[in-house]
Length: 304
Image 1 (cartoon, helix red, strand yellow):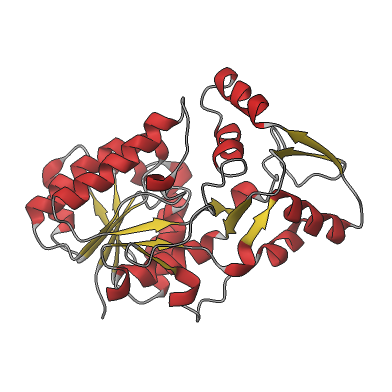
Image 2 (cartoon, one colour; image 1 turned 45 degrees about the horizontal axis):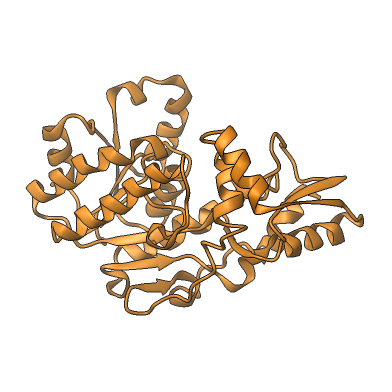
């Protein structure tokens, strides 16, 4: 039957793709839901979809330790996909895993850059520091883990080219952070889900970082714009924004994630400035060549 997998935060942005991939893979799949989520009309349709695909819904709450322990005792692997504002709540998951004593692997909610190698500045830095502290807490407790570094999520980054206020890729002018030559990594959500589930039961990813960094999805901003221009048969006006200007924007717009991404990823190169250290990490597309991932080039065809 395969390992039993529990997903906490399964109705979230990336969570639903992880639940779907787990159900498809044939693993007995469980999703922890609050009572409130089950009666929430916005989520009820998704919950129905989960049930139809064979997912077992467990009711519980991160703030109810007993319900958490009870859910965790039924499974082998726990995956957290809780949102950015709930990162600190994962201390409660760690405590419940510790008490349950049966978990073979925990995947905390990462789904971004490798936070141990980031150059984030305030005001976003404290949130990312929390993720670093969660890693250290997992390691200190001796809980077996895999950290999933999925880099940029395609639907978020490519649907608007990270242009402030945009809802589609640019057709006239494009604002490019830095000099546009720093490379980033873009991954489609179904692929992130598929790689995550494969890694949960793979001995090669035990106590390692899984970097989702497929070769055809590594692009600089300039390369991305060039690829898009070819598709639409048009040259865009390019406005380059220097680092000093981006840092100024960050001070002014507090927690604007796009401004932070522009700095951390497209100026500092937080996704690509380092080689993967084989003692701590592995690369997903090398480990799982059977996953036919969506390339950036193909993904952009959706918007032509």
